[in-house]
Image 1 (spheres, rainbow, N blue to C red):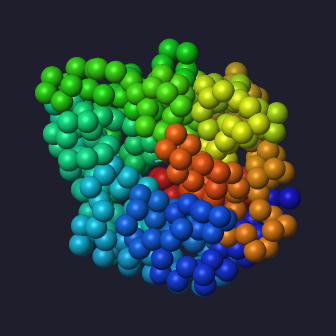
Image 2: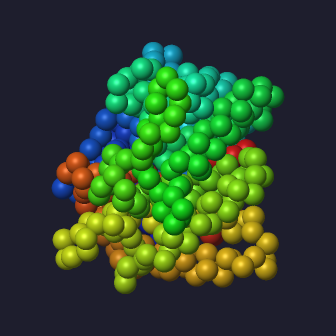
Length: 373
Ligand code: GLY
């Protein structure tokens, strides 16, 4: 079954290269992907999907298209276009870093290191965090972290590995540690965001940006945490990150609804209108696959995670995949960007498509994604 889905992914992505030209798909409106120049936080996912399709199919046209995106990421960096946020890891891990991994391309490696330096510009030593959004000193966002940022840390860990410079590692570990202490709650749920005092570094309060309410658990945030802590474990071998990822994953899996694909927030009231977030399920599948790579065969949580992975992939394939809909642009239906903000609450998300294909490649081909070397 997975092969059939992957063939479908390749066929749709090939059609989409023709449709999109040099633009980047973001989220959909009325089943059509909204396209942008290389200016959004999501543009690396299109690049990463092209690289995965190339690796699966061997079709050179995917490689050509992926390389064009990397050239565009070079221009974006050189001209400092829309890089004033923390999502540099999403952008450059899946584009130039993937090219370096696949082609051994030294220019792509150099570009990725430069991107890591841009991300380092968001380090706030007085708090020990990478500031997610806004300029330094911003009254709302100056001392704010978000759980999504855990997926940007692999860029820094990787930069440490390839350059030998300690600063990248120290910043990534400090941020992971603040995230573990303040974003993860005692019952294994998570805050989407957390605020610190900008001058003293004191912890202030948890909050949300895209979740149901400040103290709720936004499912995609939980998913970023599962995969993000698993990747911090990969680079640091700190058992606390492994344990945190497992705890977050179990919380997620204990709350799967009947059709096995999560609602958008674990605390949102559930009725016939409640939106899903298929992208959160796809991210979680990848996070669990990473965990299963490292857990020993006799680990007490292995069976739970294996069953949760099987359920999640079954739920996505049977109820959300666009296999059998040849004209569909997206791969997974019913993602939600921001239900709270009324922004694409029931649509295709390019990151949902990317993580779905990454999960399939991990399962079928033993691929490991592009997050570490
Ligand atoms: N990182 C932004 C989001 O997940 O919507």
